[in-house]
Length: 371
Ligand code: SAM
Ligand code: SF4
Ligand code: SF4
Image: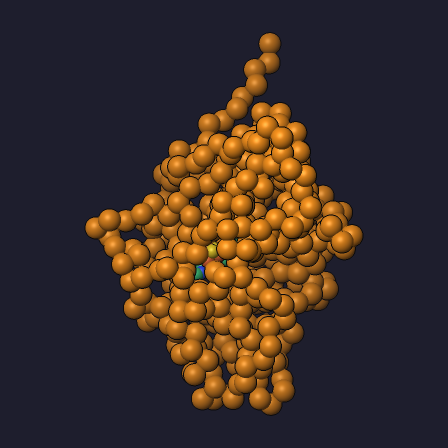
């Protein structure tokens, strides 16, 4: 007799089994949370594993050889991810970002991309399908990702200086391989390539201007991200954050900048163009200028828990519904119920006491929930 194995949910984080309404309302794309924010963007973590140990995300002391990653059967399968994506599209989601952990470590990720690339939004347009990657495997995989239907890619890169970069990724990974990955991504036709640099004071802030200079006339938009107090393992302190205003000030002093209009409402990055007309940079001020009021993003963890905020402490176990034979209509109803209750605005409420180590709150790790 074959036994059906239903793994228990990861007990490191509290979770709730979603409420399934007896008579679920049909989705119409107009779902709105308690702060009148729609649901447009779904970030899906496809693995909790990574080949880097970035000091601000997966510090080695915690993510060591004994760290218990999720077993394979706990992960959502590609079929399950595709089914959930369709459910979110019914609620108006137009943009999907694959993330992790390092998404390119998920075996046969191209297969998932192919499955998602065939989906269309409620308006019949192709999904805006993108991925955030550390770039380590990009040179090898860019062509197959593009062939599978990936449109865009965001690459994380924190420094051009070898010593600083290796100090941040903490596995001695060389800068040149990531830069090569970016070049190959461009060469195979991946569009609007972005490079994200997390700035940590005293660690890589001296790299702000060299990074800006390097990418200025490349077909890439560099974005500076304020170091955030995400997760519970990076020991975040406010004085390690370089405010975006300071980033802009430093670049502007050497290469003048002017602020330009966002591409769309809810864009997380503020845009600054170089005054000489060549190139632009973005700044994502998650700490100093919270953008919760426009936040239309939901996050799906590697094992199928829905988080309504990057700083949430508990997720809603959608995998339990998928594996317990609930219908799409019922899961649509459950998601609707969750989103209608949503009132998250952590970054707007953040104070310097947030990470009071005397009374820490168990925030979920970014490598698990996805960035
Ligand atoms: N491994 C992939 C990568 O690094 O691009 C995808 C996952 S990573 C968690 C997604 C993004 O989150 C990366 O751009 C990373 O730099 C950013 N990130 C991680 N921890 C952060 C923190 N504490 N503050 C700000 N950004 C962070
Ligand atoms: Fe890995 Fe990305 Fe986290 Fe760095 S930021 S440890 S590359 S998941
Ligand atoms: Fe959205 Fe939460 Fe970030 Fe605010 S803190 S922008 S609600 S994810």
